[in-house]
Image 1 (cartoon, rainbow, N blue to C red):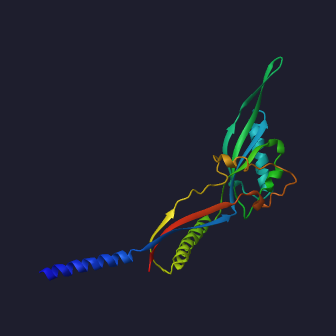
Image 2 (cartoon, rainbow, N blue to C red; image 1 turned 30 degrees about the horizontal axis):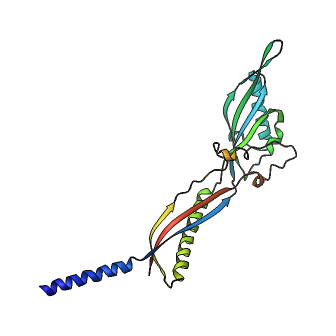
Image 3 (spheres, helix red, strand yellow; image 1 turned 90 degrees about the horizontal axis):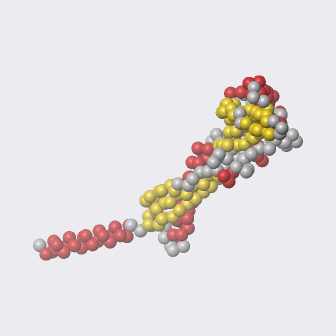
Length: 231
């Protein structure tokens, strides 16, 4: 009976030692990033016209639609947002009220087909503000996957490098954790850092066809935390 108990104790100790030996691991973090030039943009266009008549608003619509048509941009890419009629008061010997009708539009552009040259065909006195409020890429999902894979590869390479320095080898992966990082759109409306750089100033001599010089690139960055066995 005593021999059986002794054998059981020795067996338990050997199993514990074996488990302890096999539980050696290394935990590392790998990262990767990519800069992507957008091929899809969303513009906010604010046009103003003096006067408080419906004809003033119609004139703004006509001016913008003609500019788009001249540059081959379909009207379906344009969406109406809102109309505002703020008051401006001027006092002299008597008072008078001047209206400035303002209309806001949203325009979605495929940069592979169209550019911003249509801006030149809008009367400058009608333009209140034009800015990029959103940008993306048609293959952004594929690019995100590629960056994540590269981050995982970087994690394994780091583990191999560290273990080689002490004469060890990487074993099977034990755990993979994707570390979440905020993906900020450089043109997001409420991003105060971008409000000074996303406005487009109309210039008759500017080449708006070079979209890559106008658009800010989208930075994709991911980190992967991985745990590997040590052989």
